[in-house]
Image (cartoon, rainbow over the protein chains, first blue to last red):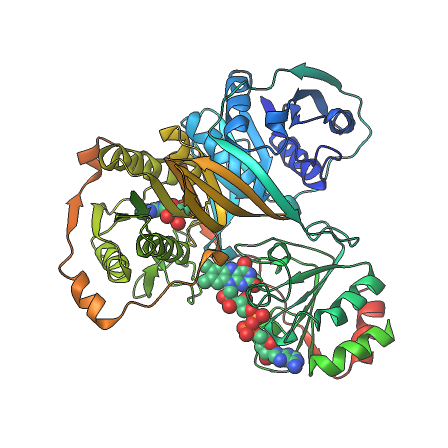
Length: 308
Length: 249
Ligand SMILES: Cc1cc2nc3c(=O)[nH]c(=O)nc-3n(C[C@H](O)[C@H](O)[C@H](O)COP(=O)(O)OP(=O)(O)OC[C@H]3O[C@@H](n4cnc5c(N)ncnc54)[C@H](O)[C@@H]3O)c2cc1C
Ligand SMILES: Nc1ncnc2c1ncn2[C@@H]1O[C@H](COP(=O)(O)O)[C@@H](O)[C@H]1O
């Protein structure tokens, strides 16, 4: 069995999700290579070479790969797959964008967002917003899989694999990068944070999120939100936790002014400890909370900040 | 310009899916079904493009049981022009859906296909990307803003770190994210008008696509249940529990 894992990075650092995807690959078992596709991403390739249990790092560099757009990623990966039995990428917006394209080119059904490896061809994945867990066996010759990073342990960083350069695809391609607006924050990344504190519609305004941010800073936590809070413009879209947002599983998740719709629960109910602060004692969020506080958040949050 | 909008009939998003006791799947008997919410957003976007004069015809297509006609009717009532139902009672995996949509696209020759980013039942998030690959079209997934001009679409995409804008040459596949628009409710006159709009009835055989199953479902199980927690009576009690009982702060 030979497995290719596509590394996720910003051309400077390898993401935490990559280590976890390698963790999933290790459960399948076999020789694991990491592909680093980027622009001036030599440092990332060197970092990938340290991931434990890796045979080789394949490094493709070129302007066309700078943003890992789907078309060049397809052109890069498909020809490599003659040498592999499985292809894994993290189920991030990036992986979800290019991997199904590769799967179709290989005439393979992608196995989306696995949370467990039962056998090299058998996996568990959530469906219906995580209200059901589907165990599936893939009959495809090549397994193309996205991995939910929160469900796997990251591989350690003590290895010394070698880095092989491969050519970037030539193109031309029919898509072009124009620009991006990235949310800048000194707080930990939402999907990797040990503590997450999220606000919902109950926060009332974007200004009021400052109460959450101050507590986040005291706890070293990341800040998340429900879709209602994002829709209302309180916080940027990449704060959204849920079925169609980010999936988090921190040690501690604090939900403030969030009712607990199934779509929100899908993104946080695997957290180790859940706290809910809501003034409505019947809010469904209390059904998944380890500790519930029925209170007005405008009173509870300042008290909490004080007490920490 | 012509738009193709694939819409899926799924469990209504307000309903919590229940796993059947025998582990054979999710119980959909007597459960409210609706158009996949991301499909509604796709239809809405197509209708807005038509209202702006960018688009002249909107074709919706659904693959599923006879009742998926209702889903198509909903789209027609929102403003789509005609529908195609590819009728089957079988499970159709995204790969086969994409193959059927490819066949439809080769017949219809649309300039854009707008799909939902994800169906809320299988949560696969792959059909649009697969269709793009099969047609050798560029793709812009997770769209939160779409502008069409000069044979290109400029698309703002929701990505993990924030927002990204890309430009794709037409024809292209776009998949919708939640903030692209807020779908309208169909008015009564439009619902009446939709009854007279045509729906072509087809089968997978008409397109020569075999519905093979690549992912055999072994079982469907309930997710792990969380133990019921406790209600604390003050912030002080909460902090105490988090420090001394849970040990997480
Ligand atoms: C296709 C689709 C996908 C979706 N995906 C997601 C997703 O990924 N993530 C997501 O979160 N949602 C998602 N949603 C939306 C979801 O259905 C809910 O609408 C949303 O989660 C509600 O957000 P909320 O809990 O903040 O708001 P509400 O449901 O309005 O709840 C607000 C809560 O705040 C409480 N509150 C108000 N004021 C106070 C106060 N002063 N003090 C204390 N408590 C207060 C109220 O009691 C209430 O419980 C999706 C919906 C659809 C259709
Ligand atoms: N059976 C179907 N009929 C029509 N469109 C579908 C069907 N299945 C998936 N789609 C389209 O593909 C999108 C993504 O679905 P999925 O890849 O299953 O998450 C949906 O939002 C629809 O636009």
